[in-house]
Image 1 (cartoon, rainbow, N blue to C red):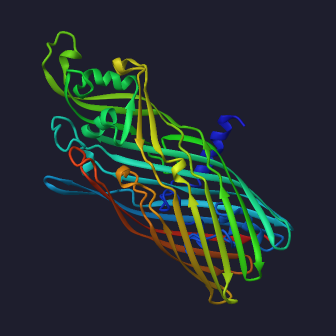
Image 2 (cartoon, rainbow, N blue to C red):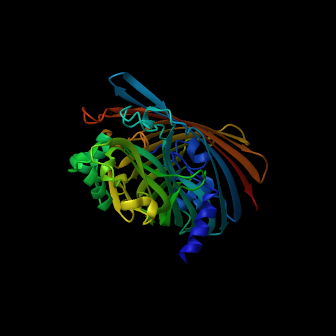
Image 3 (cartoon, rainbow, N blue to C red):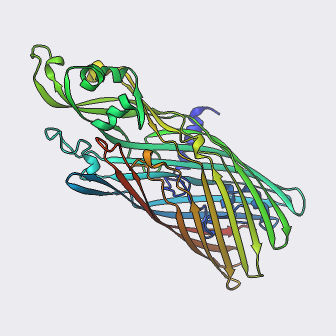
Length: 495
């Protein structure tokens, strides 16, 4: 398939699965309202077409000779804040990114021992937005009063999947299933860095590194790099973002997949296992990016005819392209069990291991300045910034119970725990993937012989973590993150 065709399919699918701001690291805590109402469990029971995201082998647990269509709509309500300690007291900022809406759908046909179909779902992501009046908007904390302050700081990571499943029943107890996934990813980023933070990248390298010819050009002017022209670097600002609710400014696409199995030990006991492969996504790229350096500069070094020693505050914007190198979604493996305690009560449990450490060791951006006149001496130069992440692998436990209250009504409740994968020392206020505990509830209602609705509500309880900074020039920052989410799904059986 040509890349242009792949990109067309990716954008079309993205319209059905916009950013999902998730709470098992960057994974959503549950897919579909049946699973999410049960704490995100789903490896060993029929959760509808959400099986494409959880365990495709469970498609064989639905009734034989049926065709099912699920249309879902999700609401995600993150509540994120960041506070910093200063000599003047603690400053608080609240993220403006507090509501996201997310459609999805799936279609499955089962004929005898085989099931197949198609679906589009949001995988997960992370995002915040701090406005131009928050403390993050002035990374120099008032030291560059001659420059215009009011920098928006935001991040929006979004990952979605279009999935083609195939499941097969080997015998009356054992079934297997697999999916081939078209995976797309997008990223918007507007990030200001203080002088101390950027100097760390260039010299002490505790939080990351910076290199490349553009760094050397700035270094020729900037005293901490060995130059003599600039008295102070006020801040650096990376900027690539769009207004789309569906795709990020920088984008990439690739493939992934899943392989699962379910085994019906008895009529009331089912076991399941699944493996999700690590993705193979292309680098995320955009040609509409900029980098700005706010500096106090000797204009005699920049302008012919003006003597040295005349310092002014300047904002040096450089336009170019950004590449996010090797952004991938991690491999996951999990086990599940579903137990019918009575004819009306079912208990479920999953345990999963998400291998963040293999894909979130660092976050790498490569900025290349356009070779155009307005970029001056910066044209054609390159800067590579690496922000250390060092995420840990994450264990997620999902527990749930459902009660068939009547032939038409099913009540569900659950609990989800996912260990915080983000080390305090590398926690960034723009990427606070720190929520650990969730409570979930839900309801299923049969509208008739061919249709039903299911709804779930998930509460991610407030979690806090503090990046201690370096105790001198980089202050400690505390991030807090909670969520209140909901999913609604309509199901129609064609036969």
